[in-house]
Structures are given as C-alpha cells and as structure tokens.
Image (cartoon, rainbow, N blue to C red; front, side):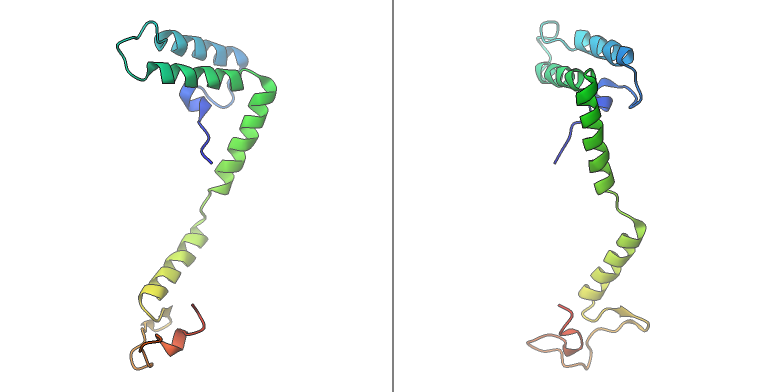
Amino acid sequence: MAVKDYYRLLGIDTEASREEIKKAYRKLAMANHPDRNREKPGCEELFKDLNEAYQVLGNHEKRRQYDLLRRHLLESHVYYQDNLINDLMEIFRVFSRGGVGTKGFGGCRGMGFGKRGCRRWKDTF
C-alpha cells in the first residue's frame, strides 16, 4: 500500500504545529493554484494533493490516524542486516547448486547431479 507523504508534500516537519501546517499549505496553494498557472501542466493535480494533505494534517483526528498508518508502514518495511546476510547466503547456496558451507562453494561435483538434481540437497528444495 502506498501512502503519500503529506509532510514532505507540504515541506514541514512531522512535529509541525497547526499554524505551521496552515502557513505552509497557504503558501504552496497560492503558488500552485491552477488559475494562476494555466500554462504549467500538472498544477491542478499538485493543488489537489496539497488540499488533501491539508485536510488530513489540519484535522487532529485524521492526522493521528495518518501518523499511526505511516509509522506502521515504515516499521513493516525495515530490513535488518541479519535478514540480508541470511538471504544472501541462501541465494549463494541455491545458485551454486550446493550451498556455502565451511569448505566454500561445494557444488554437487561427484554427488550424482543428474536429471533429478543433486541428491545432496534433495530435501532442501
């Protein structure tokens, strides 16, 4: 699920007050209003996004829900170094047809590699 970053859109900090949100919205809305920028393509869409951001961040309850959703999505996409190392080791093991062990890339040389694959790693896949 993709969530628009309203804070970045308005150019404010996540701890911004209501007055700061309002000031940033008004400044950007005036600069990007479709009636003032008829020759610029995409201003209407940007203006709609700015309005949506202000509607959410300007309302205390909507802002609280948005912050909870945003925090949840950010935390769920954290990729820890341990997971990365384990995944890389698994990739090396699979693509080397034998895995990475204490002796390095052993492969399946002399282990009956045929139509059914390596008997050494038969139960792994």
